[in-house]
Image (cartoon, rainbow, N blue to C red; front, side):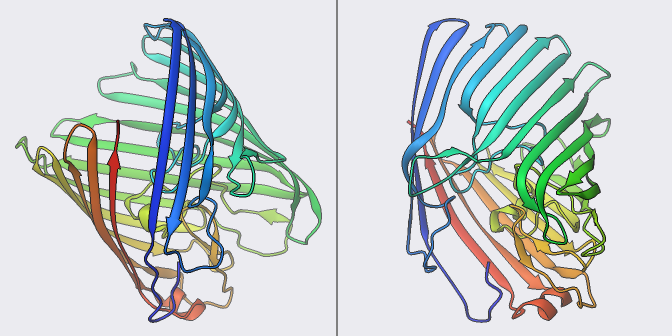
Length: 379
């Protein structure tokens, strides 16, 4: 992301995946997926690993599960993992996206699903075969309860992430142990109203620094009428804590674990779920059965200027502790999604960021345009 006036960069990403599944019995399957990613026309001297990675193993696992989705399931190997809203553990539809090495055990019964996992993220490496990221492990459980009331789902979760050889605020090297506990609720109300709310709290030690952070996300939507277009208005507020002092031995930056922030402007990587305040208003409408239009307006603020501005992947974009404003900017996002056939889909849109005072004080301060066109073909 470049905030320099006149700067521009257009490029083409291609992603090819070849999958094979063998199912010798109803309760046993073997799955493998190769992936080849290329980028053309990228101006920077170094291409990001999530854009360019020649043919490699993306997924490869053994799955044991009951056919009727009741009972126990077990998946071992390299796999995708998406939990709940994907704000903490998920994959992105853009780039090459993340997978994990490890095991996931599940228990199913009517109204209840329990997932228990022990995973390590896979490190994308264009220079060699992809491998698990050294010294980064997570164990946890995610529970889904969907029979507590009409149109109500409750999802409590707890994770523990362990990292080795990371630096604390004063530069000392040590290990980190971060606990995350939270819950998500979602459902529908009379009058065509839908809602969701998620709240997470973190604690632990980061190379000797104590950890205390939290984050939340709240969405309410209203489908205006029952017409075929299904017009829907929505409002959202996301927040995540940031570190209020740079060298006090206490870390308040929320760790978004293994996810990109899945709001609509994540296409342009504008803001992650850490050190942030983000109100949003949106509208979506089905122009036809195969054409959906969505428009969003976002306001981006930092929780504190003493911490960094992070993009949707949690990567630092700017740090200016002397900034007098927390306002990063305002963004307009318009997206069109076309389902041309059963196997071909096209999306096109544009995101424009109007820089706020924080960006003007901390970067060259230019606005940011992100037009895009994407197509997907499944065979």
